[in-house]
Image 1 (cartoon, rainbow, N blue to C red):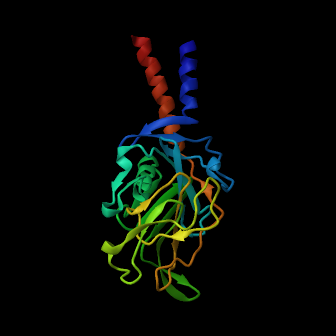
Image 2: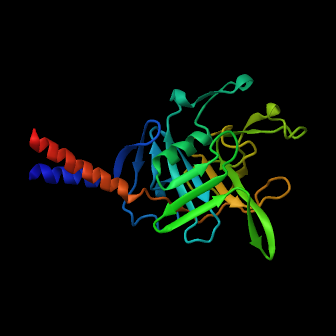
Image 3: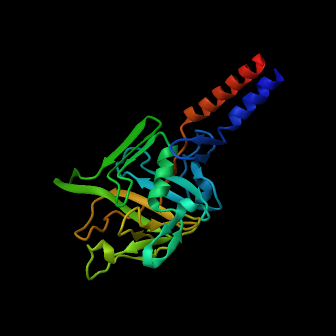
Length: 262
């Protein structure tokens, strides 16, 4: 009986800190109770859903702009610059030892059953769905939305703060071979950013740094593809689905039963 209560306590503790494997590797996810996340975040300290291991940390924000309850959510990503997975050969520009925006996004999607993103690759995402409690947010590239009696074309746009991104030669802005790495003008940091830079080249050529933020917003854009919606300062922490905790608890009971038979 003592062992039973010990295992039960361990399983319940998994709701605060546990490891889960989805996709490649093992990601550590740290959270609190499912009742958390009701207050907008102000810094990394308020993020509940963390993925990855390492001394550096970055954040990814998804802003649905759908007016459907809480509509802007954040996930955290921890990483190690010494990990060879994050050593990127950038040709004449040398090696950049940091994850790309695509690597962070994929790690988070692998770990979060409630989040699905299409178009994770060299450019820009095309569709995002996220279910929080009983609400499902769903936005896709190319939606025509009626605004003030007129139909407007909406898309996912990419803001960043901190790190490096490739920018295009303004004399030939559509020639990717002429793009070059540049420090992101908007600086990163642990607190929620108030200044952002629009990413020109997308996920695969955006490199993180410790304290960097990625912010995706569903919005209209002007003729130069500049988003017309600026990042919100009202962002809620995504909370890992409670079913994962239930599975960990069930696993503890199974382990107890097996040990009883030995």
